[in-house]
Amino acid sequence: MNDRVQKLSGTNFWNELIKLRDEQRAERENAAQVVKRSDLPLEVNSQGLMRWYMHPAIKDVKLSTLAIYEQELPPRGRSGRLKFQGGQILFIVEGDGYTILDGVKHAWKPRDVVNLPLKKDGVVVQHFNSSEENIARFLVVEPNLYAATTVDRGCGFEQLEPAPDYRA
Image 1 (cartoon, rainbow, N blue to C red):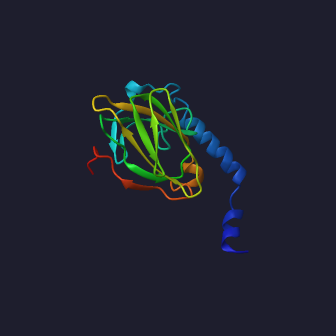
Image 2: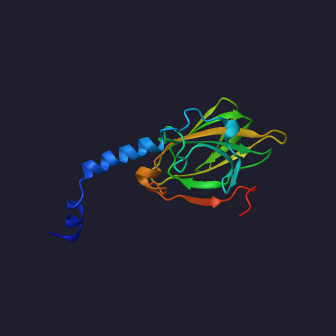
Image 3: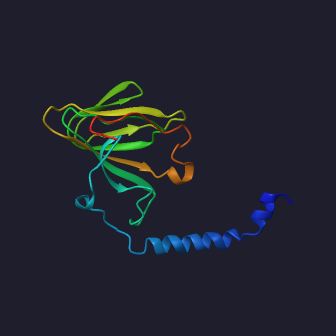
């Protein structure tokens, strides 16, 4: 019997699954059912200005099956440029702007939905606010694939350029 077989044979994986279920239930017993924007801090990171509703590291919400954040672009601002797997939906809340997706410009306005496709080799994306006076805000939703596929999600996850507001 090899070492791996010996190690695995010493564990009852059904019981481990039940134990994990019970731990998850206890962890979320008092979790938030409603996440209020007013309770979310504005985070400045290398991708820009964000408010996180759901994130793999946020454990005090009922579900963790999605990653959801609001991104804000200041007047004439832009996000960082990112290469990642794709598979995101953006709902434009306010402002006019555009997204450069794999070198192609896609204009958007309030109430538009922008689909960032899921691609084997990933996508390169950056968002821009066209207004000189008003902010642009959009809600971003994607499946929480981090646990299933790791943060690299099969293609790599690289910050190619930081947002101008970010200071390391």
